[in-house]
Image (cartoon, rainbow, N blue to C red):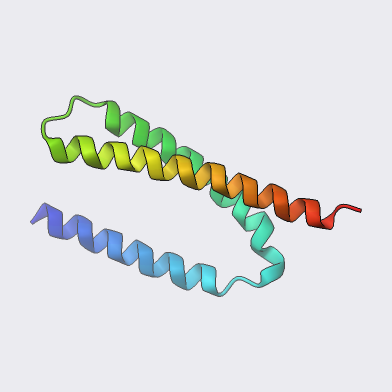
Length: 91
């Protein structure tokens, strides 16, 4: 039952995130991307903490490791894209 509850929260957060981001004007994408990268950095810390807890099952290890990898990929990629976008506005 707990797994269904967690999957519902995941689906709801995906839908809400998509609905919010799709309504952002293009002019605000760069500042919002920088903020999202900062938030994802906090998520990375949470993923590291959850991955470092004594794992009781293989699924816990796999999910913790994938959370760390995906959050790291998101933070690094987001900062690279933000830097590239900001370079476009420099003279």
